[in-house]
Length: 192
Image 1 (tube, rainbow, N blue to C red):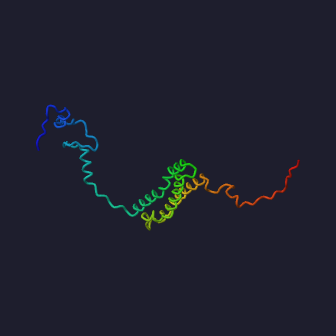
Image 2 (cartoon, rainbow, N blue to C red):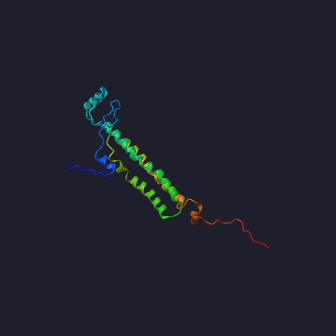
Image 3 (cartoon, rainbow, N blue to C red):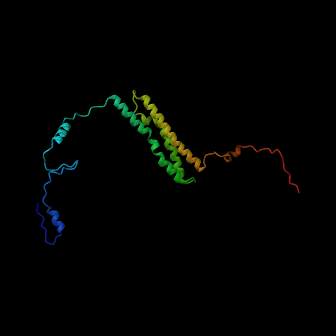
């Protein structure tokens, strides 16, 4: 490859880029930062030699026992079961901020607030089938019950939003069609 010739009209940074300064030797009293060993080989201390020997002698990872696998599966199942409750604060804030009037955004929020928990309850067995085994079946049933409870809490948030929008018949005026007219006990007559 041919060398690049630097003209005298080139800026100083071009000359410095093409001809970097010579590498300075490292001060032996300053150790390398963790994870950045120097490129030059140096003498290892006794502690570093011991650590290197330990890592070389370390046995390969052993396979987990069935009990350990069951414990791990139950922990992961609990993470799945508590997943629906983690999104509730954000959903609640969005429902509060969307207002109580009938608009497309608030209607979509209510629809999603009902759809997601109902679909979650219907898919409970599919959500936990990868964690279930014969030895941890009783623990997984508890996790499934907690999952269904969390989905019901999410459903309650949707019901709360419906009530705030005035779509639930919770007042007496919502049931006027089924009320009978009261018979007056006395009649007042206008007199001059």
